Length: 421
Image 1 (cartoon, one colour):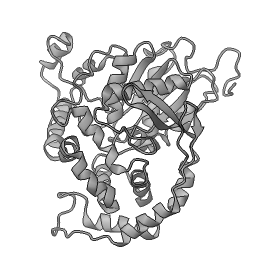
Image 2 (image 1 turned 45 degrees about the vertical axis):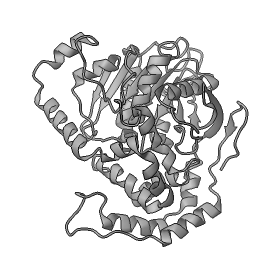
Image 3 (image 1 turned 180 degrees about the horizontal axis):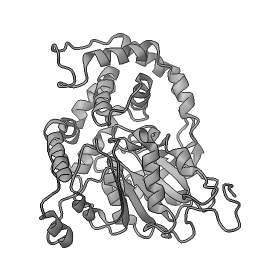
């Protein structure tokens, strides 16, 4: 992989996993010992044996990592050291694609777990596309790999949590020349968006958008109007959403408890067993998406990013521990108080479906998009729908337009439509 940097200079990044690492993976796969399975278990007990056996066989004999690597390298990627107070400089990996439109809005895209920077791939050409007739805004896109994920360096000591992620994000955007910017995230990208809005809005972060609108229940003292609205009887859709949320908390959150309390113990299995890592991630890809037709190679590419990651797959799950104080506090604790504009997209298969009235605790809600199809991985499952929401939120005349002092997402008056500087 690309050489490490020791100064503040951005360097192009080309993914090149050493052949000995690829050979080591194949040797590990050849020694796989699969568990048994109860008759008729299906998905009730976790990832089905037949699925995992098929994926392992494909990983060993059909999946072409070098071809996948070449496709990934079509993205414009860089690394840059970013100084975080108390943690020193962390070398951060990111995709940076500028639009041809000079007035495009700088947008920071932040993934979650078990995702990666690859989640931006489908929406990248849509977001950066120029609009010849001024139909929609365009964006300069930065998609960062979270520290400890993908090809970003991991923190070396405990305590790297919301405030530190926000500092890293903001300093990265400033280093790229974006003094003002907007933000899009889901999963951890949503949670960390709250911290970034709290600490760096509205001076630098002007507005943000989430496709996983998890929020706290409003209280009389914090959000009196939203609290009073929450006392009214919920409609059928809201009641059904709450029921699904409670079911997920009861039957789907075991992974979260483990990763938030004992990540090191789980980390031994994820770091040593590619099949264990595969099953752990594959289960979430299927269960959290809305019938998305995952191909085997798609799954293996996602999992391979974790297996070949700079810090190893165990590093990625520590965020759960740090953000919850080892399971002793709520993830959103300490993240409230931001008042910058926020837009929300609701997808029906999202794991948490909370009352929309609660979302006012996230900030000034200026846009709400409701969709009939899609799940947790919106950028990958429903790229056009997600981009349509961002265009609607930041388009001319909308509530989140005109927030940046020099950019509005459109070609400047002296610029020919659809052409860059």
